[in-house]
Amino acid sequence: LGQQLNSLDDFQEVLNTVGGYAVPTDYFQTVFRDPKNGTERKEVFLNRILPIIQKLALRLPMLFPIGNRLPLLLPQQNLEITLSQEQCGSLLAASFFGILKFPPSLHSSFGFPDYQLQNLFSSRFGGAISVLDCILHYFDRLSKEIPQGNVTFSRRALAKDQIPDFRRSVKRYLPFEIEPSSPLEDCDRASLHADFANEYIGGGVLTGGCVQEEILFAIKPECIVSMLFCARMEENEVIFVTGAERFSNYRGYGRRFVFSGDHQDQTPRDKNGRRKRTIVAMDAIVSEGAKRWGASSIDRDIHKVFVASSSCPSFSDVQENEDSPALPLFATGNWGCGAFGGDKSMKILEQGVAASESGRVVVFHAFGDSYEGVPLQRWLTDLNRLLTDCPVTVGDVYDLLVSSPPGSNHFVHFFQRFGSSPQEPSS
Image (cartoon, rainbow, N blue to C red):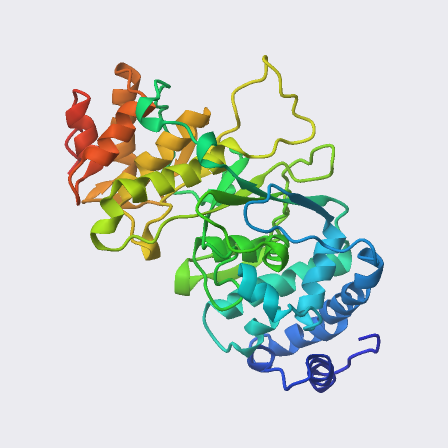
């Protein structure tokens, strides 16, 4: 790794030597043959990006000396790890060269994500190319200056006796703040952002996935480090990443996701050098048939969001006392829908139940989506109007969720139960 690599052949030889097998490099062969800008990108990779990846990989023994091993965040353990941004870069660089190997016993015992950046190397098209574009841009930025901040990874679980009785709660069900179309990661007024996670944190970010979680991890590659030491989440657990920096802009979603240039993160830092933004990885239940409407499924996801909204670590310069302001806003959206199959009206109200119980206001990002032909923004605007006029409690909404017939439009039931009707959508 210490030698200068002057060609793709040199790069390939090092990959094969370190890995002990012929590592596919289809991405590099494809991108660097692009007649539009392939030659320029190849020169930048060989002369600027690859040397910083080598340097950071070689720094691994100094940044993690013997006796200072990286702990694992295992299930049901409320633990946290704080790493410098340089340490994060070194761990990503080590994965880039295939240096880090997991004992098979750990995978079988606890279930860890596959932390191998090289999984992306075999891609010739699709989301994996765009994810790797973002990661290489991250290393390009580090070639100019390595940020001097920190990132904290926290695992939080709540036991059954720590979960409130939502049915009996008399706390006010809080109105939503609404963002009609802006991306969730652009929400500056909320310091807690939802990651629509897989139970294995990071989801398919290293295997070609490119929906909300994968895009978030691509534009903030320090989040990917969590895949190295965070085991599969259980039903009462979430994982927080505090301080990860954003390096990339993007366009599109899913198959249309593409890297679109540099991003300069202006989020201020706390006294510990962390960007004052926390991402919470929370996985929804996979909704299958009638199961999605059952009380056990509803409870499971409300409990998951309650852990996320009530257990968030505070920033080092926030004083927690009786005179403290309300908890920071919680930016989320259509969590548990899409590939997970959840009903939008149900998942939105579930998130409101959990967040309201913990005292957080939800900033809901509608992404321009509709539900039963009506924009989500309109549903929530009418719901907020009712909540302003009518004292609805968390217990009231919980009871509505568990008592509504399967397949119901929960918004309509909400308006019917609490004495109002949604306005007719505009033509």
